[in-house]
Image: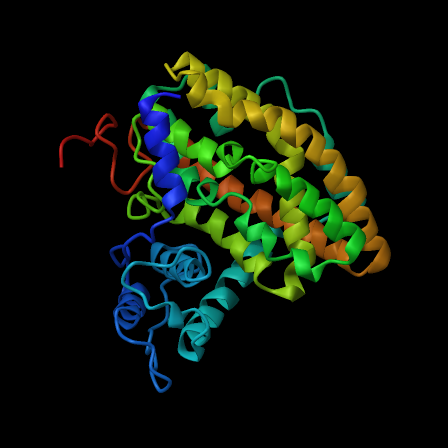
Length: 350
């Protein structure tokens, strides 16, 4: 193992809470001010209304609310996690976000059609970020892509674990089988979050948990927020299964392209292992999710089929927003991050 990979594994395994990010609007400002104080029973958070459901203020505030259920923040007392005032603010943000997602996703097709769409062969010529990075990408764009994805992949599989106790036993057992692989199959050094950290280090990025939160814009935050939203609400358990299915079924071709792109742009074998691992693992997971999670779940409760289809459509909607954001920025030869990396246009020493 290289010294960089070893350092990345150490930083990823430490799990130290990151600092609170800089606010991006009045809701963030009010929320972060409250989180820096003790969570007394009578504490209230007078957060004003966010500007819009897809905007920076709402998405960062919602991400911060959810992060209290994961690693938290260095300045935030753990007692805030289930504080009624915090949950009241979170509920307002969730209501606005979920309504926007439902509008964006439209009316999903029946579940059978939704799954068939995921399984359809990709067109020979694609237009997504993985295609761009393989065919036209620069190293700084690949590094930016990893920064965007780091907010999820450094805690990969954690949002989906919330749904496990909310599933019937046949589906629960199958989903845990998939998750076992995500966490390394009993080998901590093979956990996907650790492999991602090592990939970041290989491309000269800081693999610290939450290190790039201030740099990541709303479209990437929304992708992670959707998983947490679905995972933390039992009423949305079907949607979370749909999200999980969308990722597991569609990821192998994209992962293969990303591995080739990173190798082309100078990554070592350590820097491509994360995506090479997903090519093989997710091909197996696709079968498990379809046949041993979705089928028994919807057979036990047919009403959940529409929720699973919504989860698939919602995942496509938020991913399309992120893809559009990345490609518009890169085609204009500008950074897709709020704080460009040193080698990106507009970047440099800070």
